[in-house]
Amino acid sequence: MPLLRAERRALLPPPLPRDYLTAYWRMEGASGAAEPDECGVSPLASTNTVGSGAGKAGNARTFVAASQQQLSVADNPRLRAASLFWVGGWARSDLDATVQTLLGKGTGTAAATSEYRISRAVGNTISAVVSDGATAHSTPNIAVVTGAWFRFDLVYDGATIGLSVNGGALQKTAHTTGIQTGTGGAFRVGVSPAGNTNYWEGAVDEVLIVKRYLPSPGLLAWLAAAGRSYRDLRDYTG
Image (tube, rainbow, N blue to C red; front, side):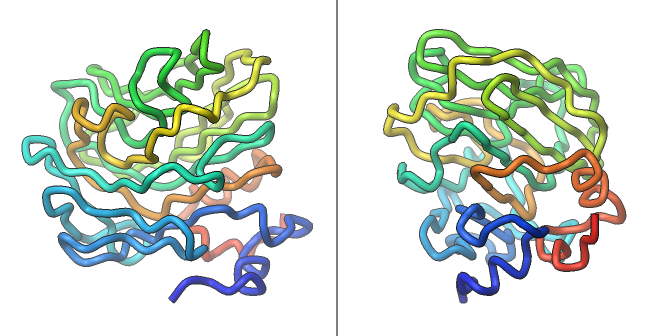
């Protein structure tokens, strides 16, 4: 059952208003099932029977690249970036042989067609990319470990994009021209924004989208500690 507004507000660290959480997928769905949005607006459809397995908080959705699996939902305003924007969650990458996209939004990977995405490169690193429609900027690469869970948090403050892994310091790149919102592209997990390449091999858990609020370094570190999920925020005291 989707979270009521009062319940969403209770999960957010004060003084974060209740409507700043715009999407939240616990990734508890059964193999092949759609993944409900706890905010009740953006359920993710499963393509090619996205699996289910043990996660960081309960179960997670599992992806096999060779099976071209993905979760996706059509464009809507709650999934588009804002001047203050945060996308976070947990992931595990089980393959280091190809470029893989963890999640993203748009219709392609070129600057004109991409809004935002997080991808893994060959060589055990991940990075985030955002575009204003003409120019795309990428964060520095951050190391991850094949087969190990990691916390990821993409943060945009209107002037820089930053990516944190496992609660570490945000690795930043200047981006002052905003993130485009007009591609009409779907939000996808486990595949590039184009929807047909760079499939993820591994698992994804506890994904959130928050607007008009920037998490503090302390909050990111707290979420990464002990495998915490978004529901644990009710216990966060700063």
